[in-house]
Length: 324
Image 1 (cartoon, rainbow, N blue to C red):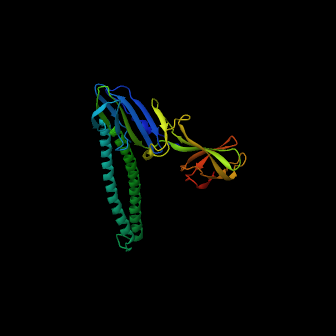
Image 2 (image 1 turned 135 degrees about the horizontal axis):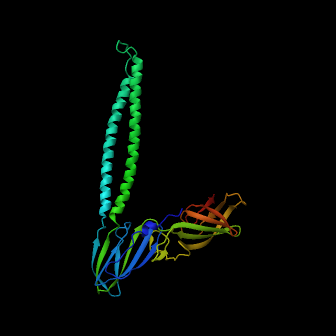
Image 3 (image 1 turned 60 degrees about the horizontal axis):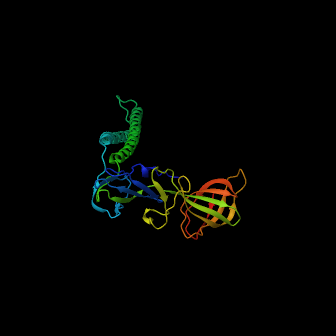
């Protein structure tokens, strides 16, 4: 499944009191390395950060002999309207909590009443000529009341879960991003590069597996991104954010797809029946020096597209069965 990377780009680094920024993104398997090149105006530049920026990854490098005099980290902007909405949601939550407490008390009362009725000894009297009927009526009333309490508790619990989800989403909107920075620099038109890492979805693994001759297959390893922002230079690298710099940057081969390598791998027990059968099976060996992560794979048999299937992660030198 291709995961959307759009959330990574919702908060775009912007510049205040500085000339237009040059922006580049290097997608990783678990996030993105973002670089922004700015030229200050009158010795000052400002930039904002996305809310998923990884703490401690901010670097600001002066360029062409410039000198950074001071960096002020700015707190996230707060949306007052969203804060008001959050207060109203909190009030609803408080009322729901009180209702659940009251329902819990009612539950205990009716449970005790039902237990009391079930343990009564039937005694016939002038005022109670049918004791068993009275006990049954009392028990039925207690049980019916309990069922009503359970239904109300279930409804209130579902409302509470829905409300908590809304509160989590609202808190994210209230933060307005991940803050920002104000950079003081000399000379007044000094240039700088701002670099930081964000967490989340970068690219997801995808493979083309092509069969041309018995005994081997051509596997092409891609990183795919569902959506790419405009106005930025986009590249991708193998590995996660922590491994940045260990492998080269790759430009997109086509929209949202980055080719990391093509390999010829040994294959055995190959089985792709003719149309319309859809069961595909083969054993493949990872003869590359690297781990191949789990992802979807498109199968081509002598040029004919035969659909997609799941490719499980495979370490170097290991083999496994791929099937559908």
